[in-house]
Image 1: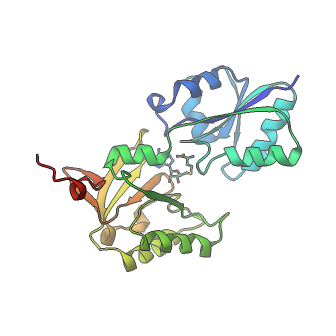
Image 2: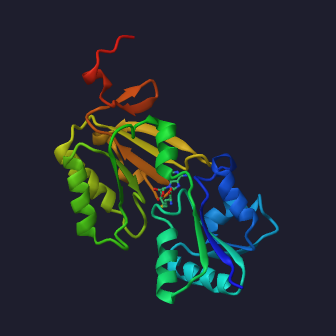
Length: 250
Ligand code: SAH
């Protein structure tokens, strides 16, 4: 009898932002596999489960382990923060299943990604089209990362930056910001959210010309607004275009 693999996005970190479907899948799993920080978010709620904790870079190893356990008949939960399909464990797991020719049952449970979490704390910056980019060049060549950054910068598209600055890529954010500065107004609104919906949460709204990349780390999501992004009270939001199409009176 084969088991089953759930690939679960657990949300940003607070129990309130984990979906009931994610909770149900965790409850029905025999073993939960994940990176230590994410495991700590679910452990309190499911202390009786078996856990296998791994280091951050071990995605394929985690996937392989999940498949092996499921092949032995276990129900296995592989967890990611946010949504497992967004810079998460879902695709590496599917890739490993394909490599191994595994026929085990698999279900992907969506979660609230950092982009929704960060956007909600900032106001509503992602109202219209937006692009998402990771500053990590561990798996994507740096030229590709910067080429995409340039295309986004030129396109006046609101841009969400994941993995903004890690110890193994400390300078990429600075490089990307320099590219944005070539094409966008220095006053472009930028939102910086660290530890959204978990301990140590901080939310900052600043300008493109005032970002200090050295103050930004891997627990942070950065949202660079576009020419339609404005600040209202302590929030940032992007106009959708209503004011051009209709005359809006208060
Ligand atoms: N699958 C995750 C993203 C994993 S990549 C998701 O959908 O959210 C890891 C990056 O996500 C971090 O470097 C950071 O940029 C962002 N991130 C994840 N959780 C966050 C949180 N609670 N607050 C701010 N940024 C977060």
